[in-house]
Image (cartoon, rainbow, N blue to C red; front, side):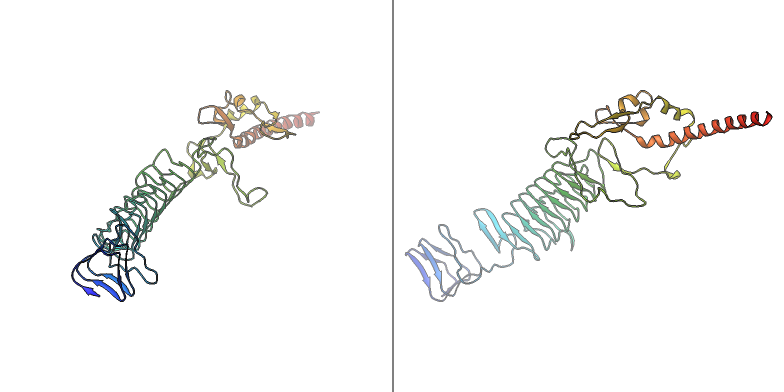
Length: 356
């Protein structure tokens, strides 16, 4: 059955044994069902079920190429599914059907990829977004992957991975090569790039790039870490290794003895004599299980008055730890002084013995 006119049906059902094709009209019915044994086609219009189902039991739903007005599956005023452009798939109210060159994008969720433009061929391509307003401000960036409501608000950044609600929001909008794993984890400035953040609300206090952060602070509040375990380290000895140091901001690093990295180089002189004022003690760490092993060392509060340069302070400005590596050059300096004194004494004693 084919027609260029409207089909209006008021009987209990509308059944066609072959194909039902309307090329330039509409099919409407107040009946309980519309069925066509071989096919139901609207080549230039809509198939609408206002109070029932559209069922395909052994066939396909074939849509024209999507654009702003056709080739869409619509529920109410929401575009449930559309495939505009080249290999794009937008589901659940996602996407933008008026872009220029965007391609190969998969966007799921209301408002996801809503600003896609693609100002030139290759831009705004190969992005994946799942979550309400996910990648919502992306215009020209490519190869971004974001999962979570409001995740990643990058506009022109590339190769970013954001996982977790609000991850990558509100920055980096133009940065690239970032990986954020955790709700609300984000960088500080628009162009921050090549950062890896892991944990809830991990964020820096200033613009940075090429940085790894795990956990937003030390403590027991949400997203903070109070104890850290890393396997594969204890008992592993490697030649040529350098000790790793950490400051009160949880920044890791090593020391260097390269002259090119140092300034104001001068002999220690009498500075090393402060070691004679230090009071070595034995102690046990409170958190160690019983029986607590005996430890040997110094107390930061005792060292602070005589050698504050050796003290590592916490974020509250209180003595927290000591730079024990400072003791090595101090001890060498004092040993050298003692060796000279011993040599002088031996020379005097040898001279007096020779005169006897």
